[in-house]
Amino acid sequence: MFKPSTWPSGGLKRQLADAGLALLLTGPAALGLAALSGSGHRWVDLLAHFTAPAMSPALAGLVLATVFRLRLAGLSAGLATALLAAALWGQIAPARTAPSTDGARLTVYVANLHYQNTDVDRTAASIAAAAPDIVVLVEVGPTMGQALDTLLPEHRYRAPSTPGGPDNLVASRWPLEALPAGGDGLSARGARVETALGPVTVFATHLTRPWPFEYQWGQITQVMALEARMAKVPGPVIAAGDFNSVTTARIGRQIQSLGLKPAPAWPGTWPAAAPPPVRIAIDHLWASPELTVVSRRLGRPTGSDHSPVIVELARAEEV
Image (cartoon, rainbow, N blue to C red; front, side):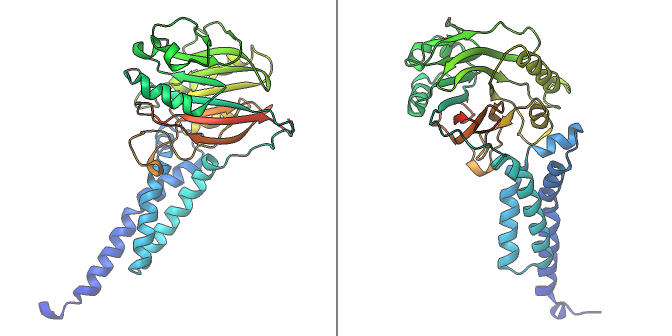
């Protein structure tokens, strides 16, 4: 029987700390594994959305394990970091085609304004600072809907064209033709826009939240509706807005199967109040192969819980 003074307390505490930290880090590792699995199961898909927030504790664990020389925790942290980095890479650096050398560019501003947001001045300043050619807005509430001329003084071509709280909006410096409403369960506003890259069809798109926050097949059937709308229009297509999904999860893969390619999605966009590294990227721009992304960045705050996204596009060199 050991006397209290003879217990190897320092060694035991160290071992417990090593094992405890290693156990905690299995959570981030599981999220990375879920994202890489490619599984379409609803629970696995839900976990795959949280890879970006999980990276910060994984890196913190790796630093702690390195500083305090915790071997088991170091292995667990290294595994978690590697899995999460591999899962996030598709969001950070998706495959892109080289831009055409003709120099023509198209800048698109994309934002979920939040339906109850009334900060018109802040939103107008955010849009003006981006100096976009096309503006895509979703969750345009009554206050913003009545202030379109203040928000968009340089974008007088709009779909819809009447103020009063349109839910989704496409606005442009150049003439556009509004497309008919879908009536298919998809919250999206479509417009055929004359641009520096030629005519482009733009869909201001807002998918429902994923299961279990909304009904299980909601996002899936809405992407099917987007596919049907795309089939009715010729030439290049842009789908932009709040997709309530990361580009590498189930819905992102479904959208990619339509032939659309995502802009980079790092740092994330929601919630805007959180530090950028732990946000989830759910606001995106997707483009058909005729177009390619030159750059992507976040815009200035609008008063919404989503950060705006600014994407510069060019014609693709090869299609």
